[in-house]
Image (cartoon, rainbow, N blue to C red; front, side, top):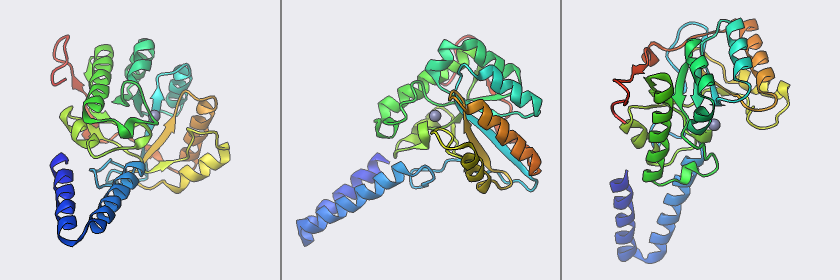
Length: 256
Ligand SMILES: [Zn+2]
């Protein structure tokens, strides 16, 4: 990607030399507007894909829960157990280190744990240079694998925002970049009915569903989402490709 960007810039410099600098400046502006737009649009595929759906003929979806662990973890787990649902928890490393028992409870209940960076710098992660993204992923991998004995294989960027290096660095850690197909923007203070209606519009067979924990109305949102899925005839599943988790080899996880 670095080589590609360098080539584009070199090409624009050559164009400026041949046809005039206004052309080069215009081209440079267009390139950076395009890069910024893709960075701020989570579903943009220019920098690599983020899995949003799995091929699925049945009426099944994959539930993912971001931003834990948090004080509501026990309540969240109880809701999932009541509905016999297994989910993927995209956990923040710093919070996991503060609540290791919550992380162990999540895994013991049969859920998967994914990397959601160490600090969850949701406003700035998209602007991080490669070395800093690498540190975020490495620290979170260490934190989660030290607690669970399993090396996460799934990654979700904070707010889903990715720059040109994000997928490349995730691949270095063997992480699959995971997006979503259905969400209700429950991370902000939207009315519950609006959250449900928005999320419902994104549902389709194999869709990855995104909700959050750690917010005041999070358990209620989850309860209503689970009830809505059941009422609409949707079951939940975990793709075979995500199972089983990679086990740590001894005390020190390999590949980190
Ligand atoms: Zn998040």
